[in-house]
Length: 321
Image 1 (cartoon, rainbow, N blue to C red):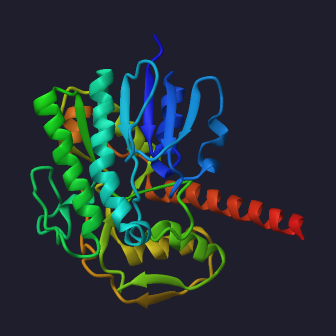
Image 2: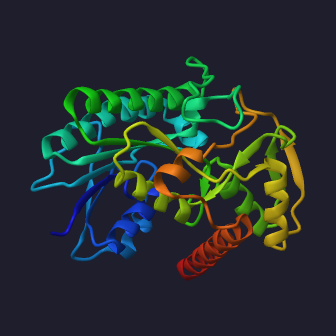
């Protein structure tokens, strides 16, 4: 029988890629999103007999008729710009939304996967970060609304697994990039590329010496799918362990986009992690997974997406005149 999957946050960056991947795997897919940070443009190409979109806020009761085999809980603001502007909703979707999604999985006897984040490690004192590290999080800082929402979501997920026997999985997602990220959403790559394509100054927070490990979205979704099909129930890091500074990333974007942009420095946000690198030993051993797309290839594909997006917008603007 055809598997039936519900993807909360299905119109978002990662959610839309997951929906597309599941359709290609033969799933009937239901995408649920309140469109607070997602957009129909991310999923309109998926319309068909095996895809359904439901506009709904997962902090409210979730009703789905019929069977559900998999619940993929991706609903949440994810960029600093979003969760700093939407702090209450971020906390609610991490707590109440996770509770509602887990309740549905329990009712339907479905497997459940929580999209958690490397932000549960906070500004880490361990490097690289392993799944056994408990993190260094400021619960009352401005980033705490996202960090603690995801930490609570993990605790809720494990409670449903241990006490209600839900077949639950937790993926800790490290910095991911690719097509369909909103331009200027506050994260590095969707900020740098539009600036570079317009030959505008590229803004670095601090001097750009903080590090991140960037994983292309196709690699991430493959790892997440493998985790869902596994029998493992503790958190698993999925990301690319290739670490680089934010300044190096900005310089690479300028090079690959043939931009004339220069780098300018701005004040570093409070509690911004100084280092971020996943230890993916567990994912390799458990899932036979590792990131494969080189950063140059992934960036070229992402730059092409934004270049095409801006061309379409320019044509639409001219047509409206």
